[in-house]
Image 1 (tube, rainbow, N blue to C red):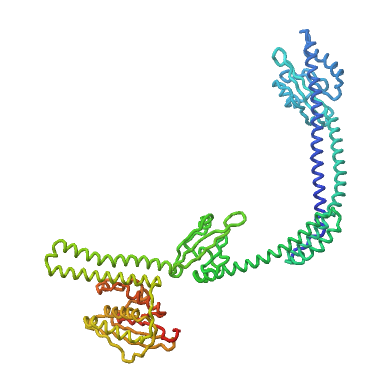
Image 2 (cartoon, one colour):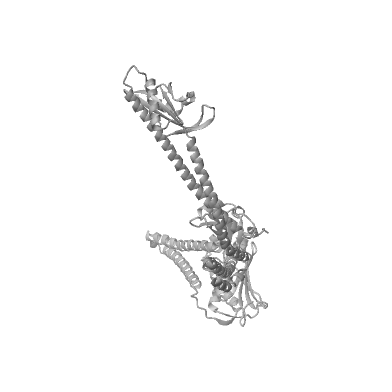
Length: 614
C-alpha cells in the first residue's frame, strides 16, 4: 500500500510556485533593464569616441596645408587641443596608424601586435569604420587585465586611404555602473521574494485547507465509499452559509464534488446493470462471439463459440484458431468495414465475420469475430440448386423424346401405320411420365406451402398394407415377385387421411417392386410400439440395399442411388420425398434399415388413435 503524502504538501508547492514565478519575472525584467542600460552606456561611449575621431580627422585636414609638415607633426599639434577641449583625455588611448597598420603616433604607450591586428583595425584598413563598440579584455601597461572598448576610423584623402585613427577607452567606469545596477536588482529580488513568501504562505494556507477536505473525500471515493460522500451534502451546504465570501467558491466546489459522487454512484449502479445485461446477451447469443485483443489473444468468448470452434478457443490465440488467416492484415482491413470468411470446423461450414474495435486514439485495439453455423443453410441452397437442375433434367428428357418422335413422324414415318402406332405409344408413355412428374412437383409445392388439406378418419392402419398389396400385385407378378404378409398383424387404430396414406404406402411398395430382382419376395407386416404408443408398418424388400453414404439422403427430392435404373423404371425420384412430407404432416415419421447387398426395410410410423406418440 502506498504511503500517504504529508498533509499540507500542496501548501508548500503553492508557495514554491509563487516564489519561482516572482523570481522568474524579476529576473526577466532585471535582465532586460540591465541589458538596456549596458547597451545605452556602450552607445554613449561609442558616440563620444566617434565624435572625437571625427573632430581629429577634420582638424588635421584643416591644419595640413604646409606640405613640408609631416602628418605626425600636425596630428601631435592638433590632438592635445581637441582632447583638452572635449575633456576626454583621461582613460582614452589614441593611436595614429598608417594604411599598412604601422604606428605613426601614440598618445600613451605602444599598442601590441595583437592590438594592431584586432578586428577594428583590420576593418579600418579595409575601409570600414567600426559600427559598434568592440568591448573586450586587454592587458594594461602595468600588466593588469582590464576591460576596454575599441574604435577605429579610416581617413581618406584624394580618394585614397591616408591614415587610420585607432581609439581605445577604459571601460572600468561602465563596469562599475553595471555592477551597481546588478546589485540593486538582486536586492530588489530578495525583498520581493521575502514579501511573496509571506503572502504565498497566507494564500496557500487558505486554499489548501478545503483542498485537504476534498482529498479526504477522493480517498473515500477511491475506496468505493460514494454514499458517505453524497450523504454529507446537507452539512456541507449549512457550513457554506457560515463561511466568509472568500471561501464560497471552494466550498461550492466541495458541494459540487459531493453531487458528483452521488451521480457517480447512480451511474455505476446503472453501468453495472447494463454490464449484466450485455453479459447475458453475450452468453446467450445464437451466434458464436469471440473477442481478441491487439496481440491476437482471446479475451472473451461465449458458449456458442466454444460449441462451434471447440474448447481450445477459450485460451487460444488467433493464429491457432484461424491458421489460414493473417491477424494483422484483417485488423487493418476492418478499420472501415467488416470482413467475411467461410471456414470449416469439424466438417461444419462456419461464416466468420471480422470487425475491429478502436481505442480512444481511434487506433485498432482488437478484433471481434462473429461465428455463424451455415452448414444447414448451405446444404439447403445446394439442395435447392440440385432440385432445380433435376427438375430441368427430368422435364427435358421426355420433352426431347417426344420432340424427336414427332419430327420422325413428320419426316414420313407416319405413312407406316404400325410404326406410327409404336411412335404414338412412346409419346403417350413420355407424356404420362411428364404428367406424373408435374403432379408430384405440385404435390410437393402444396406440402411446402402447407396447402394440403387432410381429411382425417379413424381406420385400421394394417388395412393400408392389405389394400396396397391388392393394387400392386399385378405389377409384381410381371416380375414374378410375390408379396408376403405376416399373419400375426394386429389391428392398429389410427386417425389419418386414408387417400394420402394409401399414396405413401403405395410409393414405398412400388419402390420395393422396382428395386427387387425378378422372382424375389417382398415381406410386409405391422406392429404396435406400446411404449411409444405408435403404430408401425414394415415393408421389406430383397433388393441390392442402399449404401450407407446414401441412406441419409434417400428422402431428398430427385435423389437416386442408381439414376439409370430409376429412370428406366419410370419413377420421378420424388416418391419417397412426398411420402416423408406426408407422414410428417400426420405427425409421424419414416425410418430406414438397409444393408448393402441384402435389401432394405422401411418403417412407416404414426401415433395410435387416442393419444400422442411419446
